[in-house]
Length: 111
Image (tube, rainbow, N blue to C red; front, side, top):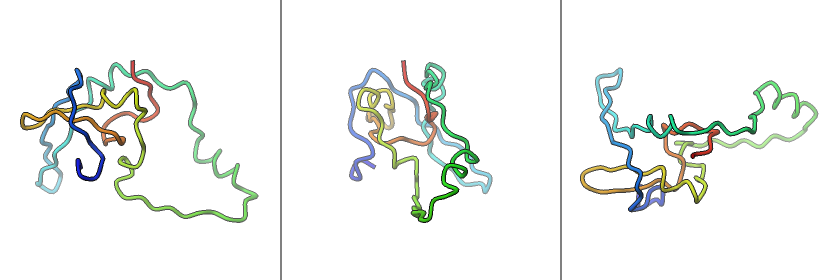
C-alpha cells in the first residue's frame, strides 16, 4: 500500500490498532480498528441524496457513464487536514492513510 501511495509513514499522535478478524470461510483478514476514531467523529451536515432522488434527477438524461471500481474505499482522498487521524501502528511501524480506508465512517468530519 505504501508503494501504491495509499499509506505514508507517519509520526501522527493518532494510532488505531491493527487486528486480525476471522472470516466466515475460516480464513483471516487483517483490519484496522477505527472504532475509537469513529466515536469522536462528527456527522457531516451535508445530506447525501438517496438512490431514489439520484435516479429521479437523472430521469431525463440520455447518456450514463459506467464506472466500476475495485477496492472503492481506496479511491476517495482524505482531506489533507484529516490524514494524520487515519494513522495506525503495525509491527513497530507507524503509517497513515492518504486514501479512504475501509472502516472509517464516510460522511463525517473529524474533531
